[in-house]
Image (cartoon, rainbow, N blue to C red; front, side, top):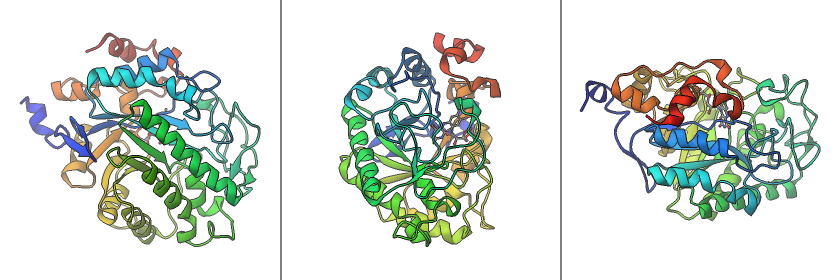
Length: 374
Ligand SMILES: Cc1cc2nc3c(=O)[nH]c(=O)nc-3n(C[C@H](O)[C@H](O)[C@H](O)COP(=O)(O)O)c2cc1C
């Protein structure tokens, strides 16, 4: 064992999510790359992108958020989909590259709801309430100006989105993905139900926390019930949003206790926290949101947020805040991050200029190095 491996014993231990074994605790977080074709098919550049992670020494890799129907789920132009068999088949090169390297790959599934700045299939957007999302569209995903005002989603449309998520999950499983994650975070459709200022409904999906969390519970339960029990199913949860990095759950620790104990009622789930601001304690407790998720749910938890510093990742694991850590920007900067940490070589640091579609990114130094293999 090298000195570094001894220093980061928790990070470089094997672990399990359900029946899936991960060689270590470092996971690539989902990262939208807006590099699919206009109709949501995976491109060769994407296969190359994921191949670099497959070779980089990661325990598991999440795909970017992948849309689930050809109605209103797509959020960004050039986002990939898994809404039909053709889109599903286009992922086979990505699945193959992970199989070749013996690394598990989980697909993240999304419905953008109101945070929709480009849909190839339909005009307009749907959301819990007809409320325009705050702030402006995200320029790194080719958006500009205000978001459109969404149409209020009906009860039958709510049910349809849930069934579409479950169908998409099954397409991913049939193709060979080792697990699926429902994007319940970052301000997209499920999170629009949970967030007070995007949900003014007066029916069973609005008002109390129990009602605002109902969509998550129905969605996660349906997908978990449909996907065979040996395949892990997870849900991503956050306070902040792509268009609001300041939102915090109004009921603080009590909201966390409710949300995570409800998810604890669903067997065979993992929870993945998204925390752009990092893994510090929240709500005056001594635990991060990941720590509270673990405490209240009893599920396997993946922590996230500024964990590219391996000392911080090791701390989070050693203090049992989480079972795994996910890394986004650090992985984008250096797809060989785990191997570099193990060998004591400093990984390439993140630069905001790296968040470009893949055709441009592949020209940067870290990616030329990664494509060539370690
Ligand atoms: C370019 C980029 C794209 C992202 N796309 C997604 C996504 O598709 N799904 C998701 O859940 N989070 C997405 N995120 C959020 C990350 O998964 C992660 O939660 C966030 O960047 C904080 O982790 P970090 O400090 O390791 O970067 C994205 C982040 C970046 C930088």
